[in-house]
Amino acid sequence: MRSAALLLLLACLATQAAAAPRGKPKDPPPLVRTPSPPLIITTTPPPAVRPPSPPAESDRTRDPQVVAAYEDWTVGHADPYVFAYTENASHSEFGLICRDGCIFYLDVQLACEDGHAYPAMMNSRNGSDTFDLQCILVDGSPLLTAGPTDTLVGAIKSGGEIGFAVPLESGRFNVARFSLAGGVEALGRARALSDARRDEDETAPRDFTI
Image (cartoon, rainbow, N blue to C red; front, side, top):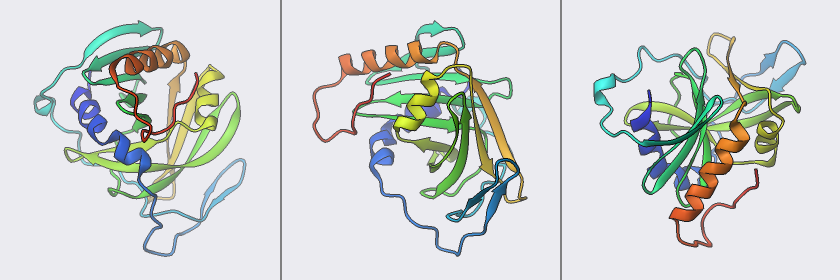
């Protein structure tokens, strides 16, 4: 699995990242428009830019165990963490990782500023919506994360494909699309594995149903 170490290290920060308040950008935000339908985003922090290169494969030291595959999705664990993810042809990843709670992560190989919230557009069979992605730097590598909102979970349940558009400093958008074939089954299996591995914790982020 291409980003096994990133997934494992991200899990250590999962609960903190999901619960952390999203700070406002320091500088006055520029306007960013999507071509169709028109969209004005007024909370844009420093835009995402492409990093020079991903971390070397030799830097990845831990290998989570794969439990099952559901069409285009893979489920695995590295105790006490559980994950489910899909990878597109460009080697970008979208998935869920759980410990005490669960967060979604998006690895589209874009540099971002640690702790900043970046606006993104999501498109699925349920239509289009906007939401914020929280940047986390894990071992120097950037990941974008989001909590399990009803909108995001509903988009996954709708099937087909899901797409994410993130603004770049050039004024263009990085667009990544992922197959949702097997996604509902994979996420359900990951949640079941996670629930079996953790003790009850009333302070953990809320559960969701999928």
